[in-house]
Image 1 (cartoon, rainbow, N blue to C red):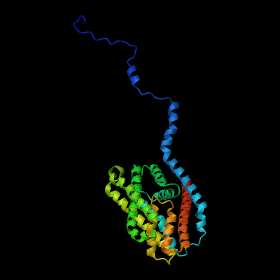
Image 2: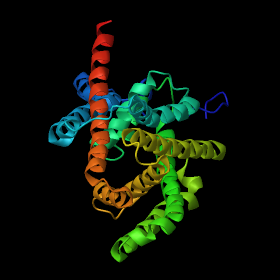
Image 3: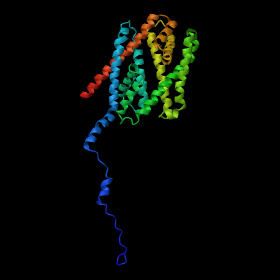
Image 4: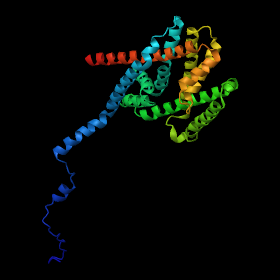
Length: 327
């Protein structure tokens, strides 16, 4: 105690640290400039991965188209081609229908501009010539590069893809119910067992998405039902258009029979346990309408025209990209 009766202030021990030391110790540690520069390429790769993925899938599309074209595509084009102009009108509408219906869907979800049709065509080509669902990866990468247009592209792309598969399975099951009474006499016991197991697998693949729909899907329920309806309409339009194209190519076969065969084609394309779907469909069609050689040539010609359209579009998109960069 001091002489004047006041209490002496408690002296703090001196550890040799200046008053500014705690503030300096709390300051964040700044890494050397060399370490920051080393991290910069990693950040650039993270920002650019959608562009890198899109470029790789584009290269894979070109390689797949070249392989298909020089393998058997050119041989099919050497066959006699249909002369009725309505065949080419129906075929063109058939070819345009998948990306057009996808555009309708994403126009509502994202207000997708018309320029997005290029990405949707590439999505379709990648799915057909690279491997399944590679087109969805390409389209997702394309959307990620345009974050101003859409903030969360993964959920929408995922939901639309799953609903496309469910719609295909639903239409297939409906066709099985309708076509089985007519086709039961044409199936061997082994083919009937394959059809039964395939139907079971189709149902099994769809059930988990329906049971756990609240956890699987990101979109609201009314939008999901709307997307499902658009996919069903796309499948029905596609089957109708290919039946009309085949009818104009071979008018001696009735349009009703071609519609039945188009339904069978969609059915066969969705069966998971069938090793050679094209061969099974061709045999089934030949049994129904005969004219095996003409029918085989028509099916091969339709596939060749589709491949040729893929090539024309890929070349056109490449030229468009070059012109856009020069502006």
